[in-house]
Image (cartoon, rainbow, N blue to C red; front, top):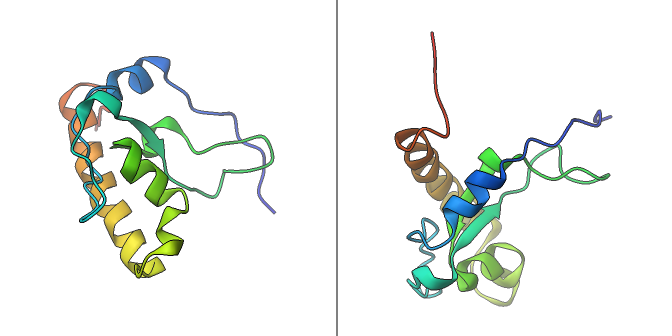
Length: 108
């Protein structure tokens, strides 16, 4: 059973993602259009029951890539494994970007 966790939200981070380069860049899907990018939440174990994935589990996506990862891939020849691999690649890239811009800090 999953416990209800408080949402981890950052309006500043969500707003910052707008107008940035798409990190999803799904081959054959991406519009490479920075005018319609936003933070795209990836699924996590805290999603549902009034919770959504934390804002640090976002990638930057154009509208086409966002629609694709939100279920649009089902009408394509992409497999679940391929879609998950693209999301993981984009998440790693996005986390590095967030870190470089001070949204994520690692302390020892």
